[in-house]
Image 1 (cartoon, helix red, strand yellow):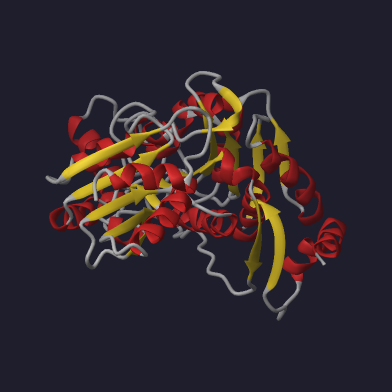
Image 2 (spheres, one colour):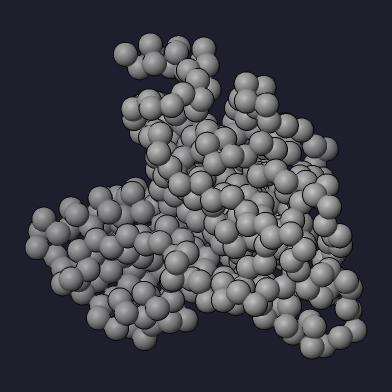
Length: 393
C-alpha cells in the first residue's frame, strides 16, 4: 500500500491534491525535508533561492521539481549570502519566499536576516541543524544554532523561531512560519534538525487550512503605523507606491535618518515591540503531566520525543514528573517558565548542544535547573534521559 501511494505521489498526485476542491484528508509517507517543501508550497511559497548543503538539500531538490508543476521560481544561487538576498528581493516583489540551509550556511545568512528584520521583510529561513561548530559533521545531528538564531545578526531586533518534533509538524509548522512572517512582517526561522529532516513518517494533509496573506493599504507608510499590533501594511514594487527600502535607520516612509536619535529609537522600539507585545499570540507549547510534577523536563525538537517517552515510563512507576515541550523557541516563553519554575523542584533540560536553552531557562526561574548536554552527533535516547532523571527523583 505504501509503495502504491508513493508511486502515485511520484507521478504528481500531490500536485493534483493542491488543485482539487473538496478532497478529503489524505495520508502521505514523507521525510521531514520533503514535508517542509510541501508545507511551503501549501502556504503559497512560489520563490526559492538556495545553495545545497547537507542535511537540508532534499528541501531544495524537491522544490526544484515541484515548482515546475505549480509555476514557482527556483534558483540555485552561488552561495548562502546570495540566496538570502535573493529571497528578500523576491519578497518585496510580492512573492512568499523561502530558503533552507544548515550550520555554516546559516552563519553566512546572518547579515541578511538582520537586513530583513530592519526592513520588515517577511521571509522564511529553514535551518536543518547539524553537529558543529564550523563545518562539523555534515551528516550528524545537533541543536547548536539556537542562540545564533536569536542573536546572530547585529543590534537589537526580534525574530520568530519554531522547532517541530515530527514530520507532521514539519509540514504544519512550515505553513505556520509563513503565516507568522506575513502577519508580523519579520523573518521567521524553522529550526529543525538532521534527525527530523531525514526521518520518514506518515502525515495527514487536510484541505482546509488557514493562510495569512500580507496586508496592503494604498498610500500608507510602509515602515510605520499607529495600529496597536505595530505592523505596517506592506506594498509591493510595481504597484505604484513610492518605495525606499534601506537597512539604515529610516522614517516611516523609508527615508534615511542616520543621525536622528529619536527616529532610531522609535524604529528599533517598534521592531522589537511588535513581536514582544504579541508574544502570547505567537508562543506555542505543549504541557504534559504538570499538575503534580515536582521534576519537569523542558525539551524541544527531536529530543522532546525521547523526553516524553522517558517521562511516561517514569510516571508508570509513580514518579511525579512532567514535561513542557517548546514548539516556539523565540520569543522565549518566559512567563510560562516562571510559572512552572515556581511550582517545580527541579527543571531538567536535555539538549543536543552545550546547554543553550538551559541557560535561557535559568534567567526566569529560581528553582534548580539541571542541564544535560550531548554533542557527539547522536540523538539523545530515552534510556539516557531516564538514567539522568533518576538522580533527581
